[in-house]
Image 1: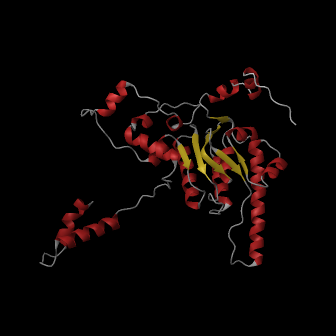
Image 2 (image 1 turned 135 degrees about the vertical axis):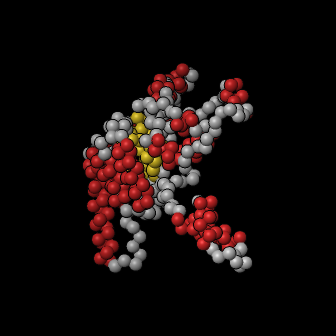
Image 3 (image 1 turned 60 degrees about the vertical axis):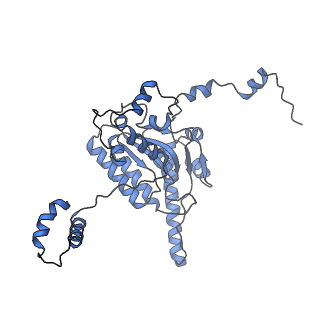
Length: 321
C-alpha cells in the first residue's frame, strides 16, 4: 500500500526544502494506518497444548493437515494430537535433513483458517462475550457452507469461570452457544481435549448422540452457577441476582438431565458440590459416548483383575483384622 500511495503523496506535498524524507515516510505510514482495515482474529490461548501441536505441524508440513483424509469415526486432527511418532524411517530422515529446491514451498496457513478447513470450532478459553460471538458465528458459517457435513466442536474451557472459580461471564454465554447448536441442521460432534467445566460440560453433553468424545486424560466437571461479585450493590439488587442464579441453576440441571439421561434429582444432587469426572466416569454418567483410547479400551478390558494377578503370583491376601 505504501508503494501505491507514494506517487499521489509526493505530488500533493509542496516541493520545498522543509519537506524531508522522514516527513514523507511519516505521512505514508499515517495514510496506511488510516486506510487499512483491521480484520478481527479469533481469540487464541498461546499456552493451549492442542493449538501448539497443531501450529508446529502446520509450520513443518502443512500438506498433512490440508490433505488429511476424513474419517467419520474419528474427529479431524486428533490423530496428530494424540499419536506420537516413535522413530522416523530412513527415508523420512533423509527428507528432513535435505533441501529440495525444485519443490515449491508455501507458508503454512493461519490456525483459524486451518481449523475452519477441518470444520472445527475450537473453544479454548472461558466463555466470555467475545468467545461466544466467535463460536456462534463459526457455527452459522459452517452450516451455510454445507448443511449436511458434521461440525466438530473441540472443548477445552472452564466455562463461565476461571481456574480459581472467579466468575468471568454470565451463564447466558453458555446458553447462547447451546441454543445455536440446537438450531443447526448439521450433526455436531463434541470432543473434550482438556477440561469441560460448568457450561462447557453442558456443551460437551449436548452433541449428537453417539458422537460425543473425550480424550483419555481430559476432565469434565459440573457445578452450580456462581453469583457475580456484588460488593457495592444494594441488598435488594443482591437478592435479584441470587434469584436469577437459582433460575439458571434449574435450567442447567434440566438440560444436563435431558442430555445425560439421568433424573433431575440425580443431577441436582451431584451438583450440590463440584462434581469432577474423568473420561470413564463421564461415560458412565452419560456426558460422553466414547473415549478416544486408540485401542487401549480393549487392552484394559482384557486385563486381569488384581485378585487374579495375586493368585497367579502365589500371593495370599490376609483376612481383615
